Amino acid sequence: MLRKDKGSRGEQTALEYLLENQLTLVERNYSCRSGEIDLIMIDRSTAAESLVFLEVRYRSTQQFGGAAASVDPAKQKKLILTARHFLKTHRQFTSRPARFDVVALSGNPEQPDLCWIRQAFQA
Image (tube, rainbow, N blue to C red; front, side):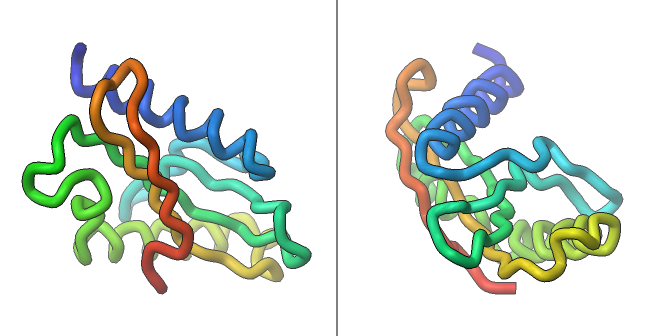
């Protein structure tokens, strides 16, 4: 399976899981000069209805720390800059609390293990 196909499949798996867990999709693959955010969603499970910027990562093994560890400080910085750009261009979301989550997928790409890390890092 090609790397891009694994990424798309992983992103779709994450999206389906998150939709089942009271999140609503706002935008998929939002990009600007500073980077890309895989999924932007609203978490309706809390009274505040948070805006969630999600990075989806897939790794077949835990070698080198696995999927979650691959969201290193450099990647976090790009995600933060991209989220700021999104908020500047979508002002209707600025009143909501926001957070950064990571969905880490591992193992078999057909049926990966999924770990949803809420508030994976702070801006």
